[in-house]
Image 1 (cartoon, rainbow, N blue to C red):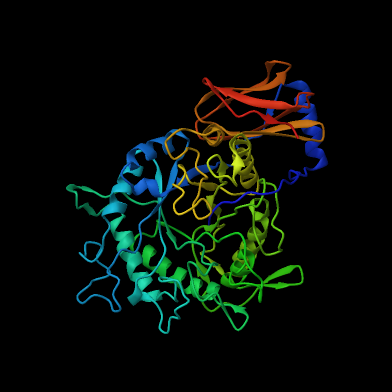
Image 2 (cartoon, rainbow, N blue to C red):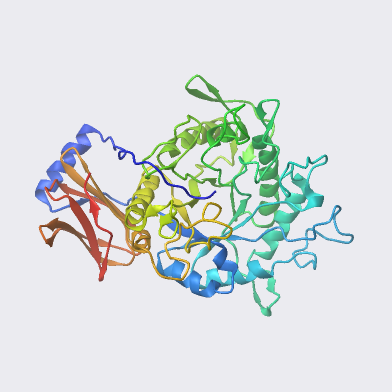
Length: 481
């Protein structure tokens, strides 16, 4: 989905138990700062077409330098677009000449060499792997993809990227092992999966559940340890009869066989419960990160709890399998910036929004966030139809958002205490500084490790602005709210 931006909204409050507040105040009076034990980790990454383009090596190195430890790469379902499956085509064989894995091979090898884990993703079925009676209005590649064909392609994917498949470009080496496989993109939009509705009822979640289970069977038959990730759902839908999209919360209730009765969620019988290892979503926001979605079943950055509730009910009822605690991942999010997009968020404000988005998602239990993009798209055919949400401009110049992504430091006031969350770009002694007139004064410091999150607090200060310093890198300065 293309990132957007609009009106402002107040920051989310974070309720804390009264006892915790008292302990925090006492600790802060004794020590300069008290650090919460072992904050939950956060993985960061990017999705961008430049990773399989001519300058992929440069951009993957920049992604790693920005703190990315994950990259989402589109492998495609690159086979002949014929009405019928090609004669003699062995869909289970990843070495079949009817497959074209060369671009994906190169991108996955480079990403792995730069120390990043790969999420391999594809969207769109060939003509011969779609359902019958496709209407002319349906987007090519979207119409009722065939479960068996998806399962066979999953087997080919998992085999090729198992870590045990010879590299065609260097047969003495093996292609890298892919960490996770993601099926499809935004299946609650007709642009990617159709039909969405039939007779006023959402059918895309049912279609997708069958696709997902087939994909899961295929991947796990080759490598039981490989992760299977659901498609990231788009944040907004259209309740019938207003439009063609299915809202994400409704999509997942149907896909995970969860009923809503009033405000309550209940599990229900499901003959083919969904199988996956992580549930993904794309929580773009219309406005700053704390702006909640207007419709009850839409899910923007501060609304992840809507999906968490559905997922936990499904887990308890056995309609989200296997019986594990499934994490929620954000596999796409971002904001268009001005410049270059005339309708985007001013770049300095965008830097603050990047930090706030990361913290808000982390605070709701999201353990992986993938930013769209690392570099701006060229505005072809227009700014409206492309994304300028990179942390770099198209010409390779960094935006202020690069520092925000690499070294997020987010403070807020709560009950007389200043709390600070962040993620460390390197290991060392982190200094937290507040503005004192034209100068900066260190008010707290702590030891951090590269890629780790930290959460600390200290007694409220009259200063309105805070920043972090670590090994010569200065974070974006943020006002205290």
